[in-house]
Length: 235
Image (cartoon, rainbow, N blue to C red):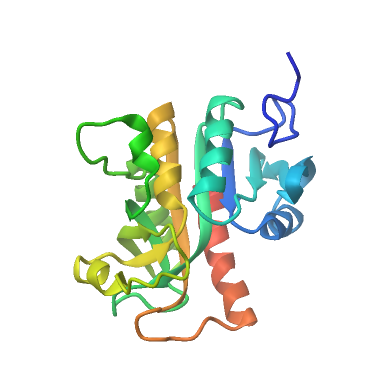
């Protein structure tokens, strides 16, 4: 058998840590490795989906891009859980706020992930599956946000399958109290549940698609992402 368990990840088994941070952008993974990890080594370049393993406060951590949407994160997280023995995957990314109480630069801790995708059909369940995060990870993220004086909200997000959605359905999700919209959490949570592993999604709010609030400036984005990254690393 090949030392490389999958065609999508070039790392050998043993080169990936039990805890993995997954930003959507592979260049963000490179940034985290260069600025937060020590002794970081590149363990994946396949399809330019960069991955690195290094040390954070003496503990091994892998950071690897996931790409955008449920399909790529579904593939990567499935392989990491089932072929590389990952225990915990924490998605770190951006989201659009759907309720007035959530503002740009705030962090959303996704306790649950509503979705409009077909991801759960593969399981043939006789009902609707509710994708949720690991409670211990949610609790620790909330505690860290409070310790660091970072504004955070815990609740549901919407994982949307389409970025440019012509249905104008976001206002309906907002009425249900869904905090923000993103594109990956539900697929990650389903894979974690199926594998018996742990997952969490943390999102920095960049805009509000319902009110037209503008995206963060590059400087604001960098500061806000730093808050989210440090919470994820310290969990």
